[in-house]
Length: 166
Image (cartoon, rainbow, N blue to C red; front, side, top):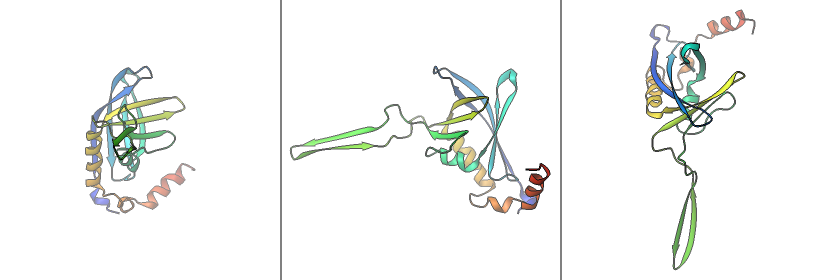
């Protein structure tokens, strides 16, 4: 553990809440990474006069969701695909024909979709991918991927868990 070298990364950005009818509402979000909890990212979503909603997600989940669909259950993250879905390329020549399907690609605008689900409701957000990439890379500057275990005090974590009778 590197107890004296703890670091924090803080970023504020806007997530676009996508309503079922397609309406979009901007939501202020604070992302926080702390090397004392090296596997997690805390998200605070400002929901106006109702206060804020707090979520904790895995750093690996966010990083994975930047490049491919990631997550099951309450949190799902994926790059937004372009609206055309699968691209079909058809080639034809006097000697024959061929048809190829190409898997969907990232949307040209670089948008990531974050879907949150809880017993009290669901929300789907669209977020600028570059901002999320910058944030994740900043967390890697604090704790390199694969080195998270070096930043954990297992005795302290067990003590906290046991004090809550879990």
